[in-house]
Image (cartoon, rainbow, N blue to C red; front, side, top):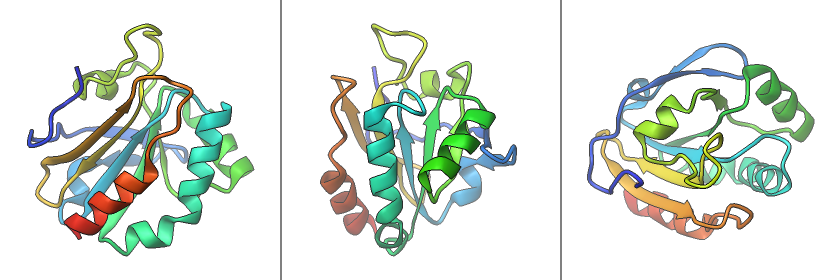
Length: 152
């Protein structure tokens, strides 16, 4: 079951595509958009991440930072990010440790995450959770943007 709105967001540190450490608590004071997606190189994931890269300015204008999270390796993330001009960090969660903390491991395909969005507010609380039950379906980006405007 996915983490609930109002819960304290579990802190974590994961590697970015550049092998740098990225820690959630270091972004307190900003709204953090955590975008779980099943796999690099898949059609829906590529479309969504490219679309969000184009909207990055609008997202950041709402005092927010965005990161993608999947089980793929840092090397896959780096190649995929460069090939698709994705403008934000991609975090590697190969053993799905953070994914499991947030209750987002896919129940039918246990080696991937759900396609899900979690917004952590400036105080470190979960402010928004959206889980796509059907993996091929894209997330509702309008709902994400509306919540960010509300939290700004």
